[in-house]
Amino acid sequence: MCDDRYNRQSFLGPDAQEKIEECTVGIIGLGGGGSHIAQQLAHIGFKKYVLYDPDVPEESNLNRLIGLTVKDVEKKIPKIHIARRLILALHPEAKIQAIQKNWQESPNFLKTCNIIFGCVDGYKGRMELEAFSRRFLIPYIDIGIDVHHVDGEPPNLSGQVIASLPGEPCMKCLGFITEQKLQKETQKYGAAGHNPQVVWANGVVASTAVGLATNLLTGWTKAIPEIYLSYEGNLGYMKPHVFLKYTDKACCHYPADQVGEAVFLPL
Image 1 (cartoon, rainbow, N blue to C red):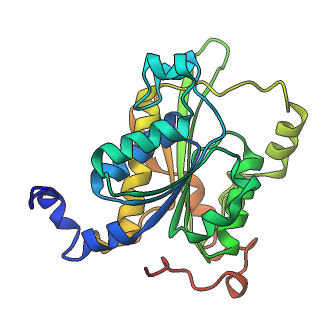
Image 2: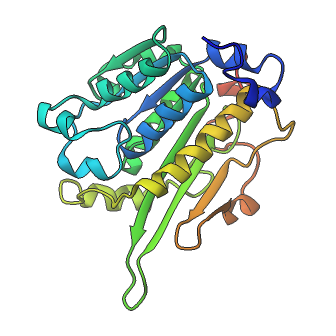
């Protein structure tokens, strides 16, 4: 392999590549968002993965799932195998635990992760992933997009990237997960359908999440990143969410004395 493979990202720091290669990342959900994240992490040089997704792709996934082909749909190749194939094409030596289950059915592999990406639909699923991550002091990064319709207005494409870090505000503190949203989701269970998805919006939030994680890991900006970013798809930009102005820095749902120091866990 050419020695200058990563020379254009050397600005991340003299020991950044070593940190990247030693970091174990978990990705929950290998659809539109998760497939982007897997691809980008592999290009950056991450070589240790824990992947969860129980599903096989359908024809509707062809508009956004990175690495998916028509033949994969015809052969019913599981989403985790598509992500695994993509990673191994860049790193044949990569260590990959690919579990074709919901993560709750076999969670122990997640305990080995240094960081977890959540690419799931629904607030309950996000809440469960965050609670697991907090329990084991693992930084958790959540992504998602949605389209909202208001009568007489164009569809509003929006999304979020949230970093839930030990000791820092959680998704409840940030107002993203609320009891009202959970109750509404429960009432619609089984009839909610799937959120609208497009490849470019998934790419924006996934890229932002990967950049945020890389900054947490390497510290290349020497600044604390924003932990809640809002994607304004109709306008084409990301911005810090307004709720950050009204949120205390300490988490009130997962107290610091129960979850450890508010720092990225060293490798």
